Every structure is written in structure tokens, then in C-alpha cells.
Length: 304
Image (cartoon, rainbow, N blue to C red; front, side, top):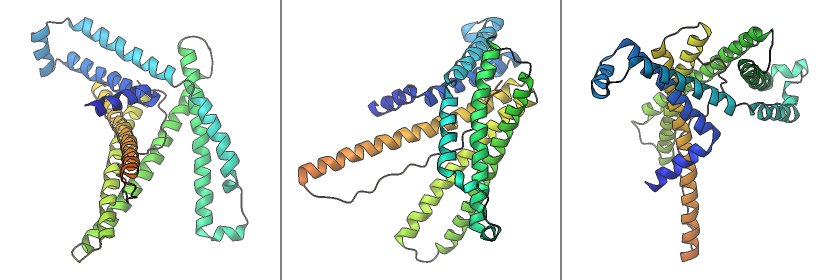
């Protein structure tokens, strides 16, 4: 119980953890709003138990949703400093990878692949920086600090970046998933024969990685739902709520696994220190590695 409380406190102490918790509550309120609006079976049960007023509850849920949405935007306002630093570091450290090479060197597939990847990484860094600046412009315009005539253009560019990021995310994750699935099928065909312990551990690691990729695909589905509803202005609280809750839950599980990994590493380090101090004997130690998702940063600017 104590370890669980420590993880909860650690998640709440981090900006990303609070953001995902607020995101889940924000979109779960949309699901509740939909249930009251459509008078679902669960709504009728709560209506009998608590005898609440429909209009009052809907207004409070809507107020909760807007307040959490504004809070999440304010929390992320300083993100452009980090993205600007990341862009400068990329240009300084890896800018050489996008410099055109001699035509003779382009025959090498690895060189060509490195150049193409470098181009995509540079575009991603520029888009990430623009997205954070756009968040500041949207928020400032909303509270009437700024007044831009081209705010609609900024919104269209942000929507394009949102679709681009999700598309690249989808291509990368699906490619890795099917490639890993093929490797697993091939490994299982060989498992009918005698295989070494190292091969068994490799298969287990591949299964864990596949499960992580499945979670990433679920995260991608949730983000695509939010993207489509926002860009095409689909006012369906159920679809929006389910998509947002799905995305937030997967992200929270990722953060939870990272906290578990850090706590396990700390406890393992303490155990090693205690064993070496008490017994004076060095022992081989195998760290437990928890699979977790490492998706690319997907900026959401026009969340409903």
C-alpha cells in the first residue's frame, strides 16, 4: 500500500502526470454528459438514488470540462522553451546528417536512410516548436490578450501538424508491430526444436515489446478519434469522451510503469548495497525491465 501511495504522489508531482489525470477527468465528464443527455440506463439508476436536476448536473459537468481544458493549456505554456532548446541541440549535434552528400555516397543505402531520417527529425523538431508557440497564441487570443487576424491560418497549420504527427506515429508503430509479429511467428516455428535459454529470453522480450506496441496502437486510435472530431467539428460527446479517456489511460499506464521501474531499480540498488555490506560478496544481479510505451510527442491544440 505504501509503494502505491508513493507512486501516486510521484505522478501527481510531475507535470505530465497531472496533465493526464486532468485529461481523463475532462473527457470522462463528456461521457457523463452524454449519459445524462441520452438518459441511459445508468442515468436512470442514479436519478432514482440521488434525485438530481439534469440541467444543473449538465452545467456543472460542462464547467468542469472547460476549467480542466484551460488548466491543461496553462500548464503547457512554457513548453516552447524546451522545444526551442531541443531544436537548437538537434541543429548543433545532428545537423550534419541533413547536409547534402556527394552523389556517389548516396548509392549506399545506409547513408541515404540516415539523410532521410535526419530530414524527418528536423521537420518534427520544427513542428514541435511551432505547436508550442501556437498553444500560446490560442490561449492568449482566448483570454483576449492577443488579437491576430491570421488566427484561423494558425489553427489550420496546427491541425495539419496534428494529422502529420499521428500519421508518422501510425506508420512507425504499425511497421514495428508487424515486423515483430513476423519475428515471433518465425521464433515459434523454431520452438518445436530445442532452443537455448537465451533464445527463450529473447522470445519473452519480443512478446513484452509486442504488448507495448499494442498499447501504442490503442493510444493512436484514441488520438485519431480526438483529431477527427476536432477537425471535422463532430459534436459527439460519447466518441470524444471515449477517445480522450482511452488516450489518457494508456498514457497514465506508461507513467505508472516508469515509476514502477524507477522504484524497482532503487530497491534493487539498496539490496545490492546491503548484501555487499553485510556479506562482502558480489552477486550477479538481473534487473527487471518493464515494458513501456515511448511514443513520439503528439501535440493536441484543438481538443474539444
